[in-house]
Image (cartoon, rainbow, N blue to C red; front, top):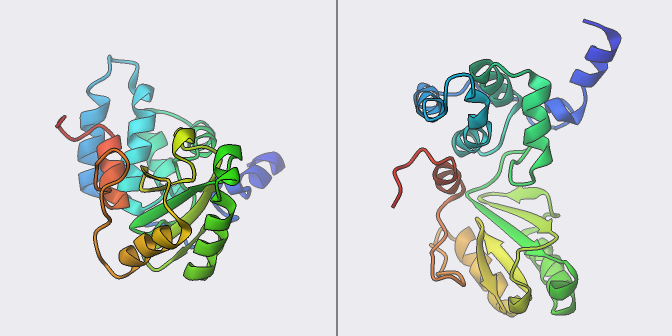
Length: 209
C-alpha cells in the first residue's frame, strides 16, 4: 500500500473519521435481494444496481457503513473509491447510524423566513441534540430544500413532508415519535414508515404497490 493510499483510507470517505464502530457483515437476506437487483440489468451493466443496493444496505444497517461499501463493491466489481464516491455524494445516504425516525428541517430562504430556523433550534432543544445527531429513536438534520416552498415552513419525517405547522405542533409530533406512537399523515396524506422500511422500499426490491 502506498502512502497516498494509506492516507486516503483514513479519510471520512471510508468512515474511519466517524466515532462509531463499523457495522457487521451484511446478511444473507441482503445478498439474496442484491442478486435480484443485479439480475434486472443487462450482462456487464451490474454497476447500474449501485444506488438500489446502497438503499438496501441502509435499510438493513440504518446507514451506509464502510463494511457495506466494501461488500457492495465486491458484488458489483467496483472499487471502494467508486462506491464511496457515490455514497458520499448523495445526501440521502447516511454515514452514521440513524434512528427509526429521521427529522429533516428545511432552513432554506422560504422556510427560514417562515420560521424554519426557529423550528430547528426548538427541536434541538427538545431532543437535546444538534443537527446530525441521534437521540434514542429520533435523528435530526438540517436540509436546504424539501421542494415545497409554498408550504413553508416544511420539515419531513422519513421523507414525508409536513407543511405550515407551528413550532409547538411540530414539537408535539416529534414527541409522539419519541413516545413510540405512529406519526399522523403528512402533506400528501401518507403516514411515514420507519427509516429501514422506507429505504427498503426505495431500493426497488419490493413489488410495486
